[in-house]
Length: 432
Ligand SMILES: Cc1ncc(COP(=O)(O)O)c(C=O)c1O
Image 1 (cartoon, rainbow, N blue to C red):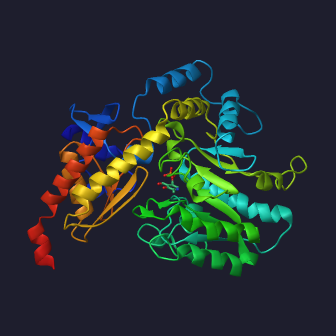
Image 2: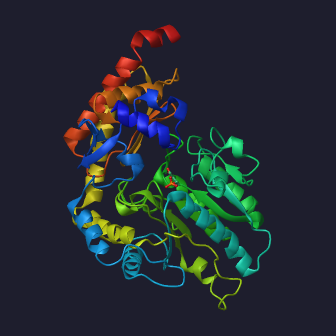
């Protein structure tokens, strides 16, 4: 392992990682995977309790997805969607159109979540320009929001570590409270009403603000905001990059929240965690505002080299079928109930735990503040064969959607042991 870590650190620049400390933090170097487990270069196994950063849905090396990928390799790997079409992408868009909570949808594909958000922001901006309406150029976004790392998505994302430095590049937004503040929805709805004339769109992560540390809302909270958008015509952008494809127990979290977005952002789980693909989904109302003369100014002059990649589309299409065939959503809801009970029993009562937050299979265990508690607890879990990763002092648990009951029990057992090892009760008593 040490040799691989050295070679890795010598040449690879890892995202969200301080490279000066990378090797000392005992990274796992993955060589292969089986089902819900990753196997490192020394043959050690780790239960992937973060779904490779929330993308893996059915586990690794799913035979049906492998087959879909191999089948598409025998046809074509990639053909551009700029001005031409691709059969498997048409089939995927037709299949997605049956299930997304968007009226008469059209799909603009990209490769990662942030570009899907970026596309939505630009579409919302140009929508008003195409209609000849001046001044509606701003976005309303929430406190605690995370929408990606490109400059536009960073702008609608909340302030803080990693964003503030880029302040001079970020455009100003109208900021409403986040899900951790009571009354956020009414406050956001009020801002939409008061500032309608300057707003192009509202951007939200339905139900869970994931990267904020799993701040959760109740499904009923969203009615006021949806009503305000419907009444004022301000476009509603739902960023379901993290919550989409079954993660919260419905195919899309918007369904539970009673939201009908004008623009929907998809990514992460769309290919079951196999290949980079994302999409911005536009409702008929939005899409039609872009229709006009050939080469004219109403056109959306935007598109990425690998948007609508054929290999990714073939996997995404088969993945959507598998979610239905295997009744994965029912399983997510059942496992979520089990996880809630396990956390309530074993984790929430611990002195070192400030709060446990869960929706579907998106969970955040907030530890009491301390010296890199999140980092240390996750390292202790990894040493016990369960791969976890924190966001600050919040331990994030986002297992594959097909996780089993014994595997959930293992995750919680390991998390409990890791917390007790890293933050002994005596230390807490001293700190008080
Ligand atoms: C809600 C949300 N939007 C956008 C993104 C950015 O996606 P990507 O990392 O694929 O660019 C993320 C990533 O965590 C996310 O959680």
